[in-house]
Amino acid sequence: MKQAAAAAIVGSLLALSSQPPDVTRALPFALASSPAATSIVLASTSVAHEVPVSTAALTEVVEEYCVRCHNQRRLRGDLSLEGFDVEEAATRAMVAERMIRKLRAGMMPPPGAARPEADTLVALAETLEQIIDGAAGATPRPGNRPFQRVNRA
Image (cartoon, rainbow, N blue to C red; front, side, top):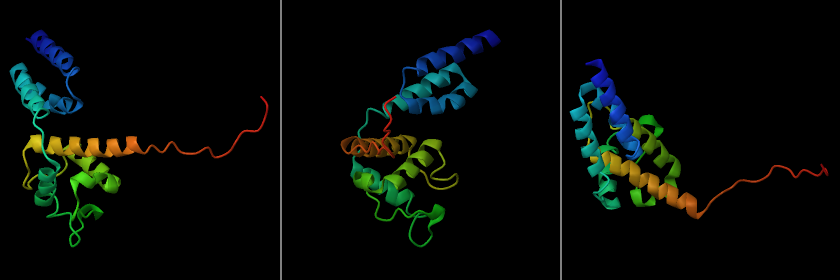
């Protein structure tokens, strides 16, 4: 019995190595139940990558689920998302990075608060990452050298 469970875990890990990184976040929950649940989780999360979501729809998700706490009046977490536009996330990259970290960790929206579908949260995080990475790739900032070495060695 234990060998079968260990084989299922190893098989799940091997299957996950070829999946996108966000699928591995579902692994502990899937392994807690059964190998059949693992395949269900993998199937349900891989569908999320095939459905394109517009940035306007994701902006509405931010306005509906995030702005109720993260506004100018309440400033939960010292963050206001009023007027945040997903399409223009590169202009507020630090805020978008915070959003990505919290969404990926499953911390936002907080437990007990209204939440959109899990696919929508994954799509929001992925879209923010793509927009920020695209902007960073278009204007790389390699930094500068603090001083020039002048010896002949």
